Image (cartoon, rainbow, N blue to C red; front, side):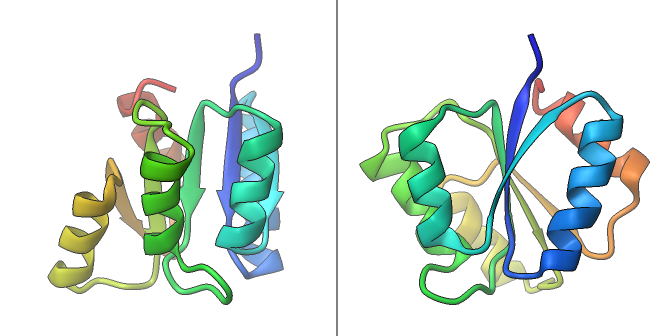
Length: 121
């Protein structure tokens, strides 16, 4: 069975790049342009992992993570934050909200796939 990953990022270029890398590695990919759209996708379809940016309109990555954990009650779904942000305070805030891993953009495809394997996907 193909593992499904939801990518949540307001940059179409980033979503395309993630989609190419993930599909080449054998994953199914769902996309959302912000946290609101991400929540809508998750209400319709379960996923095996979520990759989210932090800075997005309508609902940012912190808000998405909190909703996934509390409102959607998905405590076991791994969440990887993929962002340009590098502040320790933001990393801590994401961890406290329920993120499992943090990676900086631009990303190396092999490193991303390694991180997914480390998260069990």
